[in-house]
Image (tube, rainbow, N blue to C red; front, side, top):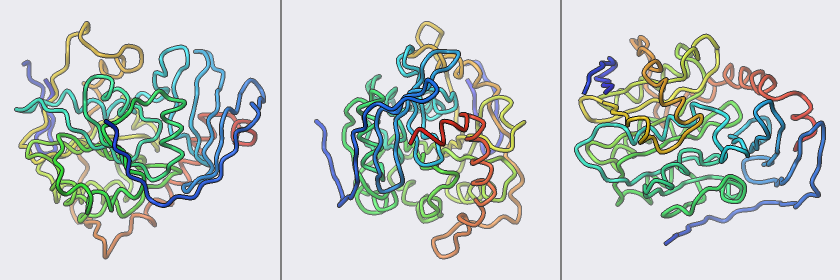
Length: 334
């Protein structure tokens, strides 16, 4: 078992309800477009940008991605049950392995993407409520990425949902994954927002926050400072060797419990194989030390610098996306 206490990690043995807001999208059903082996199979202009679904050949077979402007929201290998092309996208699913006194399965997912963790959790009996700003992202996740029917979904602003709609709900886990295009919406990272999320978590519930950047950027540091003001225990995980890069996914687990412990199943009890199993096997080497937060400010609704602090991250994201997929993808597949 892994236990994170405060910012220290220890090892031990041991039917559908849809709510929508007024939306405006333009949608084309294109003739399948091919270029250099890639195939554009769907695209639509929506409220967060231009959303495209593209099949891309690789050494590991054909994979499918969802693109929003100059960002890859997610992707999966078509020959391997849409196994995620990004291993760290499974980290949010790993909340299921956190040791808790009760074994209920109520989950709120804020920010869907292609639904990597929502899909694995739904397929194993978890009750998942989904909040997604973009209606086309939700539609495409269901049509092209095998997202099962959630317990409920809400198309609209995540901050409004946690402040107003969800206040009579309680969850075991809240999965907070709103990064796209190099930036996150700043209102979903203020101390007031995190306090609202804490109110809808059970006393031993866990918030998992996906954040992209690096562990020493000012944007990351103020996010961590804000989380530690609200939650007793905060622990950061990323893929091994990720820190060798200046730009990577990290998942921050937060709880009011004194410690966050992970207890993993035996190999024959792991619910999914492939990348999921591989990433789970490396999780022991994925913990990042909490950086020094002395003197760092807390993000508030009144004083929120996060937008400005993400400028460098947005530039880095642009460069990384050009490395993940070749220029022809960005120029032709939209």
